[in-house]
Length: 213
Image (cartoon, rainbow, N blue to C red):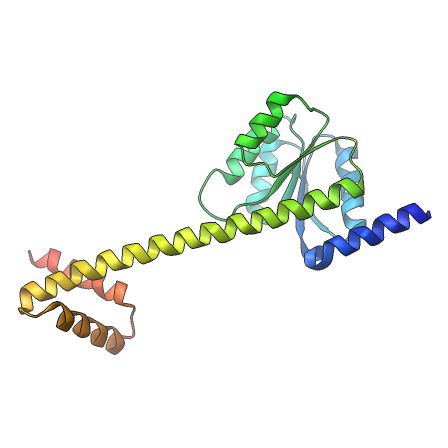
C-alpha cells in the first residue's frame, strides 16, 4: 500500500465513525463494476448487503434486504435507476438515501434525479475520496428527512387523537348532561381503569354511540 493510499484509508475511517454498520445495496448491470465498488466499500468499512443487476431487482432486494443506502447506476435493464428510485421511495415510510453512480452526466438526467429525491450524483470513474464524503452527506440528509417525517407523523397522530377526544367528550356531555371538564375527568378515569390510551377510549365511545343511534 502506498503512502497516498494509506492516507486515503485513514481519512475514510475518520469520516466513517459509527457508519461502519451502514448497510449498502449496489445496483449495476455491469458485474465487474459492481464487484469493484463492493471491494472499495468493504475496504472502507461499509457492509455491502447485496448486488442487483437491474432496476427491478434493486426494488426487490431493497424490500428483502432493508439496506440503509443504495448506490445505483442509471442505465439498467428492465427498470432504469431513476424509475427504481421512484419505486423505492415513492411511498410513505422510511426514506432510503440513493446515490447515482453513472457514466452519464447529461443535465436532463441530473434534473430528473433531483425530482426523484436522489441525494448524490457521481460520474464514473469514482474514487474512494469522492465516494465516502458523498455517502456520509447522503446519510446525514436522510437522517434529517426521516426525523422530519417522524415529526409530521406524530403531529398528525396527535391531531387525530384530539379530534376523537373532543368528539367523545361531546357525546358524554350530551348523553350524561355534564360539563366539559367533568366529561374529560370521566374519560381520564376510565382510561386509567382500563389501562388504555384516551384516544382508544374515545374511539370506543364514538363507536358505541354510532351503534346505538
